[in-house]
Structure formats: C-alpha cells, structure tokens
Length: 324
Ligand code: HEM
Image 1: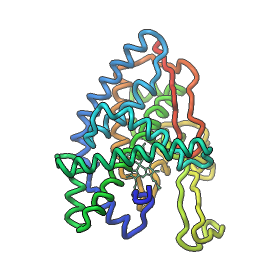
Image 2 (image 1 turned 90 degrees about the horizontal axis):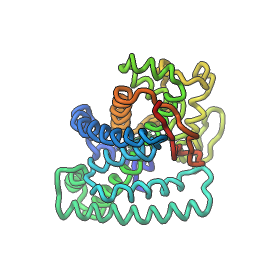
Image 3 (image 1 turned 180 degrees about the vertical axis):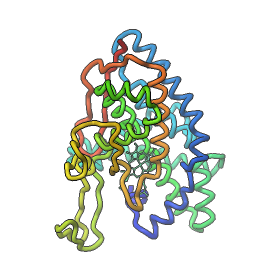
Image 4 (image 1 turned 90 degrees about the vertical axis):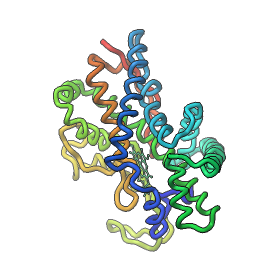
C-alpha cells in the first residue's frame, strides 16, 4: 500500500494524482451513467423477485453488487473475477483497522498478497495488449514521463489496485446505509418520493450520520501543534470523522437523521487527499435511490441489520428488507 495515493506527500502525490486524469469528470460520468442505470435495474429486478417470497437481503443482492460491477466494468476486469476481488477487499481492509486481531492481520496479509498477484498480472496483460481502458491510459501517461519501465508499471499497479480498494466497501456502505436510514425514517422517505430532486441532500446526510470511513490516519512529518496538543515527529494521529460528524458544536441535534440538513462533512476526507471517486459514488447512489423510489414502494426493514464489528471502515453485512 506504500505507493498508493493517500500514503504520498507532494511532490509525489501531485505527480501521481495528476497522472490519473479527469476520470470522473462530468463527461466521463455521463458516459458511465447509462450502464450504471442498466445494472441498477437488473439488480432491482432480482431483488424484487426475491421480495415476492419474503425478506430479501439488500446487501447481498444490490449494495454489494453495484460498486464491483461499476468499477469492474470501468477497469475492464472480467465479470468472473468480480466476486473473488470483492472478497479480497473485505479481508484486506483489516490492516487499516484501529485494533486488528492477529488472525485479522493474517487474513489481510494473505489477501494483500493475492491482490498484488492479480494486479501485477493485470498491468502486465494491459502492457502486452493495450486497450481503451484506464489502466492502458495510465501506462501511456507514465511511459511518457518515466523512463524506468519498472517504476511506471509500479505506479500504474498502485493506481489500479487502490481504485478498486477505495471504490468497493465505501460505496456499498453508502448505498446500504442510506437505504437503511431511509427505511427507518419512513416519513422522510415518503417526502423524498415527492421531492426526488433532494436525493443528493439525503445522500450527504447519510454520509454525515453514518460515514463509510470513520477514521482517517496521518503521520506527523515533524513536531506539530494540533488543537493545543503536541504531536511528535512520526507519531500517528487518527482523525475520528465519524465522531466529528456527531459533534453538537457543529451540528444541531446531531443524533437526528434529517435529510433537509445539507451538512458539510468529512465523508470524503479533505485537502489534497479529498476523495477522487466521490462523484462516481454519488452518481451510483443517485441512480440506485432514484430507481428504488420509482419502482419499489412499500419497503420495510424485515429483520435486524448486521454489521461487521469494526471501527474504521463501516460494513453492513446484511440488511433484510420486506415489501408490504
Ligand atoms: C461513498 C464512497 C466513498 C467514500 C466514503 C470515500 C471516502 C474517501 C476518503 C475519506 C478519502 C480520504 C482518505 C485520506 O485522506 O486518507 C478518500 C480518498 C480517495 N478515494 Fe474515496 N471514497 C469513496 C468512493 C471512492 C470511489 C468510488 C473511488 C474510485 C473509483 C475512490 C477513490 C479514492 C482515491 C483514489 C482516494 C485517494 C485520493 C488522494 O489521496 O489523493 N473513492 N476516499
């Protein structure tokens, strides 16, 4: 993970971030939206079929699927590999947890090894057979600026791997988390049905209320004074974004989920490391919630949701839903 964007400082960070290009600008997103909509409706068809027989798990059928299909199609990763990669990302995340157990760390190490193998092979393959895909495009950018072929491959490997890692659990959680919160607040859900143009605000409130990433880590490059506390050189600081989002000094009645709040939040981080994929995540959430509001009235929570017991990265494992 050493060469991945969040671990870099300028000037390396600037160089790598610039090399990504405008991958999720307005035009690119408009191009992706049709396919995200198609996938959304296909997933909801299956979800609707399951609902006819009783509780259906929104996580397994929809929110775990949409992000991997979206990013998988974008990176042009074979459909047959999607489930395997998704499961590796679930295990890999433990290295970034607050208090990982030795067995979680072992799981994470093994998944990192397999991800390394997979993405090294992917970069090699795109080098052999360049195409019209982001990995091939990054190889062209890096070849033009980096005479050392191995260094160029390494940079592209880190980019491709991190795009996948960054895009999956986070987006899944914003999809399942927003749906859970709306089902738990049926009056707000009904209001949203009449005011679908307010969906982006509802997504922002879900990002505030239950951020996918609760903790962002930094290492001090030198002794620093932070809010009256001395942080020594090389000391790690954890920014507890999830807690900040419930700070009564910043939000009135922070424990109230209120989709009309329009909150500023740290859900996508801030500064030079501000999330590069935030517009894509927002677009996926918008497509899914728009389709849900149009197609599936009468949804209710149909059992207890279950979470992965973690601090830094939120993951809803199951969200049983029924249709009444
Ligand atoms: C709701 C979904 C998402 C959430 C909540 C989220 C959250 C975040 C956060 C908090 C950071 C800052 C990390 C730090 O400061 O250390 C970040 C960075 C990043 N995110 Fe996201 N992310 C999401 C979706 C995505 C997607 C879909 C992609 C790509 C397809 C993506 C790519 C990135 C990248 C490349 C960075 C590193 C940026 C840098 O260091 O310059 N994210 N994200």
